[in-house]
Image (tube, rainbow, N blue to C red):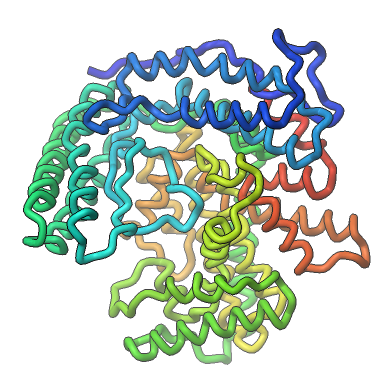
Length: 551
């Protein structure tokens, strides 16, 4: 049933004219528009075009005919974007022009290379019990996701009817998926079996939670679960015939970094950086452990009362630190954004981040910068209509994940753990885990690692045995990174980019530099690629001039 689309290409159109002194040698046909309002109008048309057509049953159409039609029409949007001359605009508006180019390049890459609707069964997962901590859900997913966390239980009649209608799209969606999935990508397919099993479990939990209150909802849950189980069985029956690779290849990875995520690195350069970070993390961890060798180890929280007390105290301590040390402008929603994520005590067993969190709750509160970002986007939306909504294709990842990860080590250096030296060890345990899984991302997409090998590598190189090879964390992370190129590296690559920008901005401003001012500027730019933030804040476009043109 599977057919290879290797070599399926179409000519790449320039996605955007180079701005700020780097314009193309000749203007495209039809050039002449130089109005920002035209860009905004095109952006809105583009966002509508990017979405699949919805059938009368509410199911998005990812059929071969629909995707081929979208692919053929994409070039016209890219040509229209190229015809808008942004070179004389204020820098923030020129940045917006590049953001639209990045999104169009993302869809181009989806059609030429990633093709999730044709090669990735997990693309058709629709049920999500919990909220993502980044602006949009990680990885490629079909339109029409069912975000269960947005519902309040027990459901009223209207909410139950809405949820039943959403669940009603699952059976026809999975019927369509059997027709669309025609490409041989073994690891993605095998992993799809596991995530469909998880969706079945989520539906079973939903059935127990909602049972008896709304008969139509009960029936919709049952039909969705039956369709999910049948689809999983079909995946299992087809899997033995699969042999094809799942990675995109180094050349495509390089193109994606440069043209979609606007990162100034190649696959090989990212490998070198991640190897260095992994070595540094292990070496510094051993030095920290040696320094602290006469101190008692950090014992995990053992009871619910202790959990509630220490996690609430951790939020208070961290918010006080940010305020008193003048790290970041404090907004009234920030405390609540962290406190709402405290959760409940679990006696175990625990996955990797639980091992860290239960030993010193303040550590992972620093990573909770994610929740500051989301609260800011909701309470103080960016004035740009292009930055006001989450960027497509996870283009936000290096800024969102990079800053959340970067805050861990940056706050340590700013003095957060001076009185608790054992907590410093946890920072380097986290760093090692991020570097190990990033190398898994890179090697999987180079088709040098299978998914199983990437899981084993990340587990082996994570200290203290806290990332077991059979755990849900390592499996889920590496599967995500195989689906979404550049996501696994974004935590540390984004951290590196933000640290570099901090240093450049400090040199540029001299005595006028403050950390609080820098963080205010960084937040104000929005959750966009750091290279574009750098251009906007410093005026330096040496990196951006070489990115986004589709070459």
